[in-house]
Figure 1 (cartoon, rainbow, N blue to C red):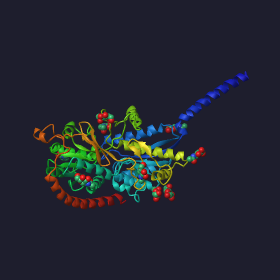
Figure 2: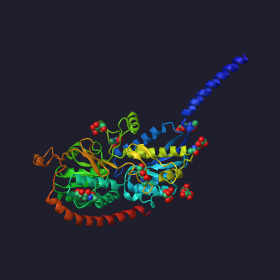
Figure 3: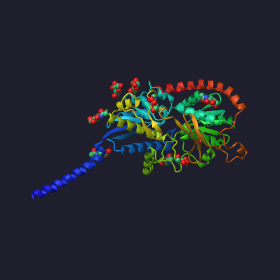
Figure 4: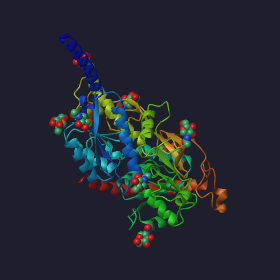
Length: 486
Ligand SMILES: *[C@@H]1O[C@H](CO)[C@@H](O)[C@H](O)[C@H]1NC(C)=O
Ligand SMILES: *[C@@H]1O[C@H](CO)[C@@H](O)[C@H](O)[C@H]1NC(C)=O
Ligand SMILES: *[C@@H]1O[C@H](CO)[C@@H](O)[C@H](O)[C@H]1NC(C)=O
Ligand SMILES: *[C@@H]1O[C@H](CO)[C@@H](O)[C@H](O)[C@H]1NC(C)=O
Ligand SMILES: *[C@@H]1O[C@H](CO)[C@@H](O)[C@H](O)[C@H]1NC(C)=O
Ligand SMILES: *[C@@H]1O[C@H](CO)[C@@H](O)[C@H](O)[C@H]1NC(C)=O
Ligand SMILES: *[C@@H]1O[C@H](CO)[C@@H](O)[C@H](O)[C@H]1NC(C)=O
Ligand SMILES: *[C@@H]1O[C@H](CO)[C@@H](O)[C@H](O)[C@H]1NC(C)=O
Ligand SMILES: *[C@@H]1O[C@H](CO)[C@@H](O)[C@H](O)[C@H]1NC(C)=O
């Protein structure tokens, strides 16, 4: 009898041990945890709710997919609102830096450059790195000011170069550049003015804030009144300002022909299918408008990035790219790569037997300690230039998509690699459907219009360039001073 009991007990024990061992492997509590902060770009006066939702989903998707890949650690999110606002970003950074369990190893975000500046400066007190996916302002590369700032996006000079390349490709001789009173807009305007040469005349108009809109519609109307039919209106503005500009233009009957709008990354991050804020008749009028957008990522079935999008679709998280569209226009792949960069650094530190903490992670990003990340991401080969904290543009040349608006999304029409067009399909000018009067001028725009006008533009352009440059340096110094005084 005693022998029999022993036997049963031994069997039970063996079963229990086996079960425990099995559970032990799958138990998240058995693994080490670190905190990864996310300064989430919540909806505000610059960012529509749909975009905030998309970014929030992208962060969760990246974190959940990478956490599920059998690593000896788990990253726990600490998500704080940052909006597009430097004060909110600093508050968010504080809320991430202070809780110390599990230890913070780094922060992803925020979306906007001003917010990134204040967050980076706050986090530097704790040796915490900040990796943004869409803060593009060039001054963020000043290492004395922002030594802990890194970004998976290219600085605005690269985008400005893509815009200037588009001006040359489309033979834009006259451009009205519409700016708003935001840091992003001022900075970008200056970048374009620095790169442009005499063949395009650029007139810059900085819109004030309206009574019940983010832009002064009367100022816009006055500026548009003098726009000629061969002229382009460049919108160097954030998504909701683009919407407000188009709304006002639509209200004034200036949405379609001859208004040929060309949007920068902010304008093309705006989603025309966002039924909460647009109406189809306005979008119909804008169909055909063009712009540049950061490379929308490679989500094809054999790409390294496909796992994220499959998971996103399976989980039914909001913001998944709509059917038929296979490119995002909103820096989502750069956000996924920012999260991946943190996992890569931690994997590297563990492999090198280096303690995983915020300081060592920062050293790895900076190239001044082991574990420096280099990996194939959703946006190509990701690595950082320690001199600027920005994406290494030699390892992966900057790619911008040239896009045109269709009724539901921005459709790829060409690619610009390192400011050189690789391809460009023919474009149909907005308003071609309605006014038959204009039919003769409609259609393929690429490769037309040369002559006397360009000679005139060369002469006038030099003067404008000088004046603009003077003006924009003043405003920028102003805004930077405000940005940094605390
Ligand atoms: C294990 O972790 C989960 C959250 O990750 C938590 O809810 C749970 O209480 C933990 N269990 C133990 C025994 O610590
Ligand atoms: C539209 O608004 C509703 C209610 O406010 C919100 O739940 C939904 O997420 C919004 N949709 C988009 C695409 O922003
Ligand atoms: C940050 O790192 C420096 C070394 O570069 C160290 O002296 C300092 O104590 C660290 N600060 C914190 C808060 O860890
Ligand atoms: C200036 O414009 C000319 C004519 O479009 C072009 O060939 C040249 O590459 C441009 N230079 C720069 C620096 O963009
Ligand atoms: C702003 O509000 C005023 C009064 O509330 C209204 O008359 C006007 O149409 C509004 N303007 C816009 C652009 O919505
Ligand atoms: C989606 O991608 C495939 C392969 O890259 C391409 O052939 C197709 O035209 C794309 N569809 C859209 C709607 O852009
Ligand atoms: C890390 O530590 C393990 C075990 O302590 C050792 O086997 C391995 O060689 C070490 N790796 C490095 C890169 O030092
Ligand atoms: C980054 O690396 C440079 C060069 O090695 C070094 O001078 C600097 O102190 C490092 N910055 C940080 C924040 O560690
Ligand atoms: C950028 O990447 C290239 C190619 O991978 C490499 O040769 C170069 O050293 C890198 N530059 C910097 C500044 O890290």
